[in-house]
Image (cartoon, rainbow, N blue to C red; front, side, top):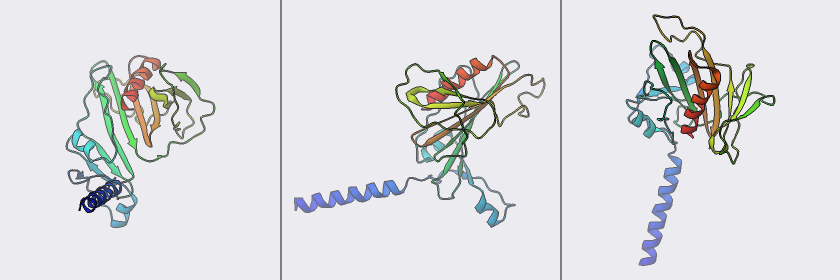
Length: 228
């Protein structure tokens, strides 16, 4: 009898483990789907399904992988209250996650868009000429180097835990991003930092109108380290 009971419990645990592994996909039960009524059925098949969570916690819980949201920021920012999630294959497994952090007042303006993928996104180029800059003295191991497809100058940095990151002068925000309606945008510092760890790929695109490039990169480096 004991042997039968032990076998039954073992079988249940195995089946539960298999089911858990098979269900590593996005949980959409509490997410709101972004509707696009003007698209045809065929057009919808060609673009990702976009979901929005009603809260940050709800969005994080819906994902099949863990994400860390940076909290210790170098200045006060408008907190991210939600996540936008793109389901590229329409099966909840190939995902992109987006949110932003920003500070916009009368003097200092800073915006950082965070994009995270659980697959190797199109962030590839040749980085053989990149300059290596050590921004973390505690690095003791290596991780995958992610590369961005752009002709802009690049700079390789070391994040915590041996993760390599790449800075480039490219920014999808650009000067067209509205950083203030009642004043001149002025000279902007723009960069993108990309890195990867454990099969999760990160892209931080930022723009600021204060400080200098070195200081802003330290801010972004600090934010990136909190995400690892």
